[in-house]
Length: 347
Image: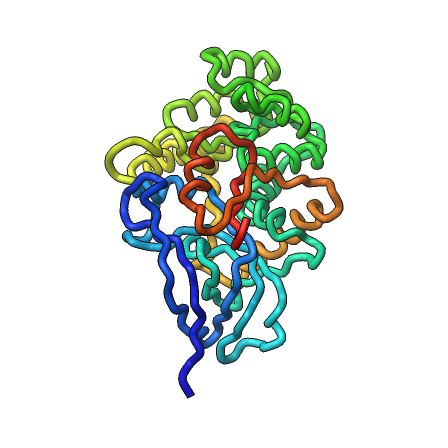
């Protein structure tokens, strides 16, 4: 008997192109292999990773052409050998790094993460990578404690807006940076907003916390990370999780990250009682995939529990149909929106 394939619509990133250079193609998705499932995409989204990938600047992206899409919420429609057929019809989240901008996706069954049946797919999608990243940076890396003060750069972004809410839920005082157009939102989320374009931004940050802060969450990188480091009090922690400042620089995609690693290593080794860390969602997967996956699933469960009970409100900037992925990417890169741009099968 011939293996049953699934017709699939995919968004292809063919080369280093502008958002309108994305291509839509139809294809036949192979039948799931041993240990795999087919997921019908119910929601995916635009993360900073795709913005870097289209420039060829993501640290370990695959060669062009490829299908972007860092994570998704989807429903299992078929299972391969040695996979429980009872998974069919159930909805899960999965972190794929690439491939999720498609109507159907092949996923290893071991990568499926359960989500509550009452969770809206778009809302759940908004907090898969963003929520796990925020949760782990707060609780597994910085080890925050109630009553502390933290700075969140880009507090209006997908990760930033989640960080602010989780930090407030943990009993922290939060200072958040963002464009003035987003200050009302940042304030509503529970943070004190500051204009990230202000030339005296770091002076204003120090004025709000003259004794220093307990943690800084910095996705910007570049030269300004030195200023983030100087905001810390003794015992404080700098958590770097990106290098947005260098995304448009020509040259190697790896060099800015390697320079950042070197700087953080030196700082972390200094006998000053402060810590400097680079957060990597994938850390530990090669060493022990089972442990890594269980940690992902446990932390996503914590985040989704807060979504379901209304404590954490996912910030959905806009929704687009899969065929309009180019417009979704363009909007996400415009720096005019708060939260995450979500892609649905049909908007």
